[in-house]
Length: 486
Ligand SMILES: [Zn+2]
Image (cartoon, rainbow, N blue to C red; front, side, top):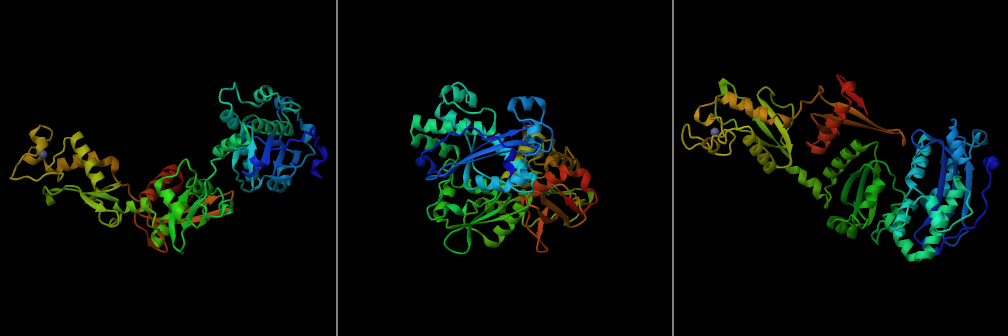
């Protein structure tokens, strides 16, 4: 019923070899738009030809009412006028039909990022998410014809003497794109085109024991994923900004690490939990790892060596030379405990050795005393430290500088790494929102640590960094508030 104002393009029956379609279904697509920006411009026409092995191609096209006026120069370029789209359906009305055509197929387009961006955004406007594996025929052309001059559709049509398409209309361009792939398969052989497409699609080499459709449904939303071996405890837990992309990257031969290879040998089953955002994913990951202790979470386990340097404030009453910064393991650290007027905390550092190296560097830059920093011990009273002997210490070790003055310089030198004060009075609640998937996660924090089940989790450097970044972004909005949305 919505095709009432849709002119049919000339029928040219393009077939693709089944050997190529063994990779999967190919949905060739082209869109016409009111402009070039997926976020603000709208679709005026969409055409799809879907190829499946052993079946006749399915052709579908429609004009779309963009809900806005088409600029005159675009009307001239595409031949699609405001009059033509006035009675056409909106994207919302055709979205289910389009989704069916595009589901479980590769999204193939010339300059696929453009078409994919528009389709994704139209679905987003309709309150739905859309994800697909896009194959760009510009890239395919570049891969197969690296020495050719230009890979625009006009150049390709001209070079390979393809003809008979209504150019700059969606179906015409879709046909031309499919005709190019068919031509390339004849020219190079199906296997070469198959290999090039596979490489461009970054097709994951799934572990044999895993069903391929078990990753087909993974959404491209933020979240946490769990890999299981033969028993009920996960062997690996990871987080992702985009679940689908991240999980697949574990199995794409380009990026497989030795750990990925071991993982994929043991993997039997994948589970995932979408979250409202990156932040929620990070916290859920930390929580699940702590709960389930997966064997392969080596990277996360390393964080347990994390810690800080603690520096006492020296005044006349506590005058002593044992004011060197001391190591404070992250597990033992609870910010806000202890009086900040007597102690400052710096870091976080990955481990004690890293902290020590950093301290040595600033000691040198600021001509601090090796004895006072605890790098060496005085053998006698007024024993000059090694830097002092080289003229590189102001001389707190020999009484040439006061302990307070030296300590103040130490604090100055370390200032860039000082842990900021927790800007809230107790626990603060954050809302992370995902408008597209209509999801809100509530996150609670206290003293830069996540709070789960009423309990403060151990300090985590990633949580800290993310929190600080978020707060910096929302400076104006959060002052005094205990509940923040972002
Ligand atoms: Zn000294």
